[in-house]
Image 1 (cartoon, one colour):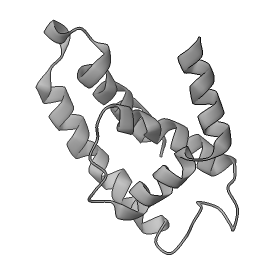
Image 2 (cartoon, one colour; image 1 turned 60 degrees about the vertical axis):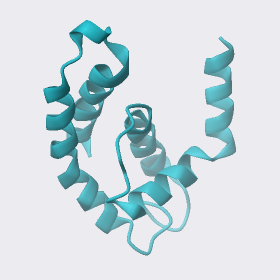
Image 3 (cartoon, helix red, strand yellow; image 1 turned 60 degrees about the horizontal axis):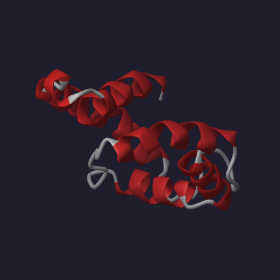
Length: 107
């Protein structure tokens, strides 16, 4: 999953963080395409499972969800990976995540 971090960060940069004049649509297209393979692997791993490792939410879920949240901010389409979309929504709906997000928004 580590290879997704750089791709998601660059996607986020070119979709939202960089000034308009510095954004390059080719980076968005490239990174979106390159993310499909690791997302497919993750989608398969989550088939029939609620969490990445075991029966409960663990640090594995926390780490991966915190990186994939960048994809949501960058408007990455997760619809081709329904297990990932379901798991990510559930992970980001946890009360602890909402508290952290609320703290960031109030700062």
